[in-house]
Image (cartoon, rainbow, N blue to C red; front, side, top):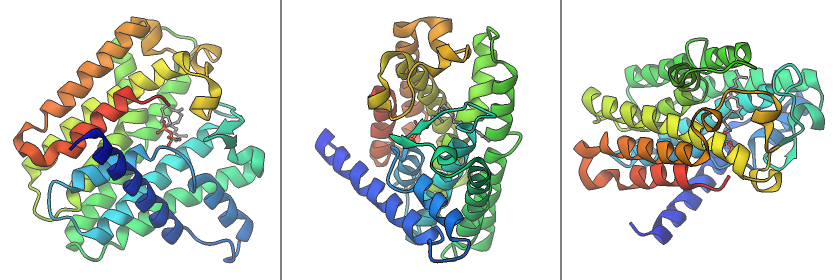
Amino acid sequence: MDDLAFQAWMQATQQQTEAALTQFLPTEDVVPSRLHEAMRYSALDGGKRVRPLLAAAAAQLGQHDADALARALAAVEMIHVYSLVHDDMPEMDNDLLRRGKPTCHVAYDQATALLVGDALQTRAFDVLSQADGLAPARVLRMVRALAVATGSEGMAGGQAIDLANVGQMLTQAQLEHMHGLKTGALIRVAVVLGGLSCPELTDAQLTQLDDYGRYLGLAFQVIDDVLDVAQDTATLGKTAGKDEANDKPTYVKLLGLNEARGYAEGLAEQAIKALSGFGPRAEILENVARYVVFRQH
Ligand code: GRG
């Protein structure tokens, strides 16, 4: 697949994600309409949609169920948006800008932002649980995988460790543990959900996908740290330089800018190697891995 074909695939998948979110989120004409409006404001028309891209790319490895995949794209992005909305609140990262527009609590209010996160989270499981084209046991596995990745032993736990570590210098192992949960767990489960949407993929194959997701989740975070230093606010669509301002431990602090970039590229190569058993069918996942480390925002 050449670069042009991959760009076209990405664009089509981003549009598919937008369509799934548009369909599966409650509309403003349903009461409580302000809450539903704020959920749509936060989730629609923005972001790179990296987690849905990963799920869709993994689904190309088999004969995926189209409805289950559409639900997985929407569910994983709803969880991600919930985390962004809560993370931006004054009690956490206290930010005013997200995806190039005012954060949810600024555009609405703090109580609404709390509820937007809560409601997006539960909506994600509601949407995923209705993937009726797959065997119920497979759907249950998807729901549980997403729940574990999101909770206190996944993303929320990673956020708790992050908040506890402000101002401290962490070792690389500690940094990796924290990010493996905070950012990595959702990226990892996005890949696995794509695999689970293919009924014929075996547990051994799902483990290979999980390995890919583990390496790539880390690579994603290393580049997030790099971009926070190397990129401007307008390009990022969120405030640049936040890690330094908040005295956060980062890969750039630990390794330096160029070393951190090199480390991320190495991790992406390891992710790609984990897919060797799939042969040429893994081409799109390979392209997504390169996109993650060479992205500009
Ligand atoms: C509040 C429970 C809770 C968790 C928050 C993921 C997270 C944990 C917070 C987000 C804060 C943040 C900036 C984390 C660093 C990496 C990251 C997840 C960045 C945002 O993801 P992108 O770059 O954003 O995929 P878009 O907008 O493109 O979707």
